[in-house]
Image (cartoon, rainbow, N blue to C red; front, side):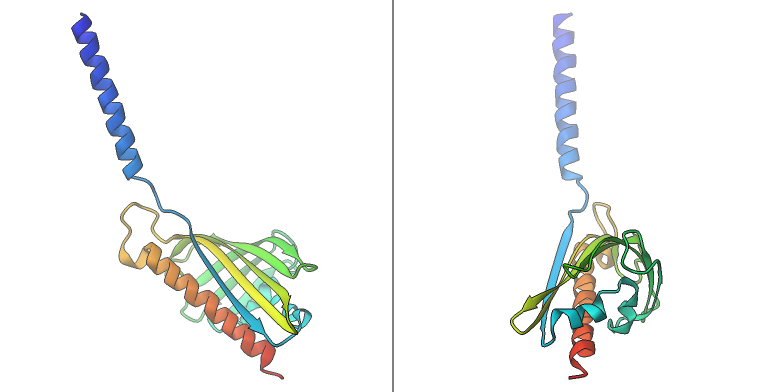
Length: 183
């Protein structure tokens, strides 16, 4: 009986160890991060007047064809729907808004993998003084479009990083053109 018990116990321990090893190998995606900044030759209040309203991004982001909002664009929980020039639609909600610090944070509510190959993201846009002008920082944290263990190439970490980088950098370039274009 003792031999049976030892054999059973050893088998259970071995199976548990195998299960742990399999679990370790089968982890999901890790969060990816992107940050881009631009220095603008305009005071922070002028930049914030353009970029600080959550739903008005279509006025300065070249990849956004149209934006509509619910709420006044300054309250936590306000939402915006962005129709991109590529036909995709992003639904986002405002998490934090601080006009005094010229900063807001928001998140994706419903993914559109054709618009951006990411399953979720949160981002923060901040305008701060920089010399005689302003520095705009846009930080995003996201997960790839396919959160399975072996995503297709178009929904991988690399595809998500490339798309988020292109989106944020295009936005900062558009903001520069809008703010500095009237000098």
